Length: 120
Image 1 (cartoon, one colour):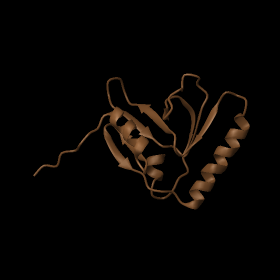
Image 2 (cartoon, rainbow, N blue to C red; image 1 turned 180 degrees about the vertical axis):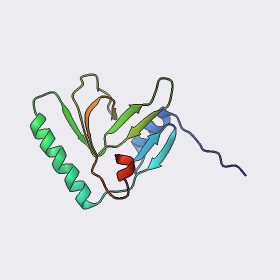
Image 3 (spheres, rainbow, N blue to C red; image 1 turned 120 degrees about the horizontal axis):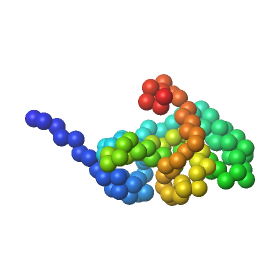
Image 4 (cartoon, one colour; image 1 turned 45 degrees about the vertical axis):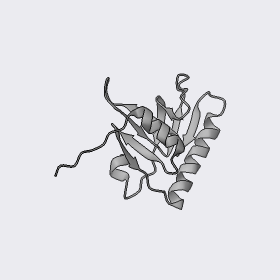
């Protein structure tokens, strides 16, 4: 018996994330549930985001934490990837999507033993 992998469209993923009680990352048509972070992980990300937000105040740049997705286009005419970085900054005025950003100038990942290989 052969197992078939189900793929979903970017549109279906984005709509599903609006209603989902848990976050999922989207990798070229497949979705993967995200695990929760530790207290230490959360505090480190919050401290970095707070410092960045204060430093960038009035610059037109925006700082996001945890619940804002970043869209990564792999190649033309291929599926996209959506990740939830721990902290992200965008300064691009074209980055106007409500549920994800496409033009970050900074992405910060707080590394943990279980996710460090992927996060790097």
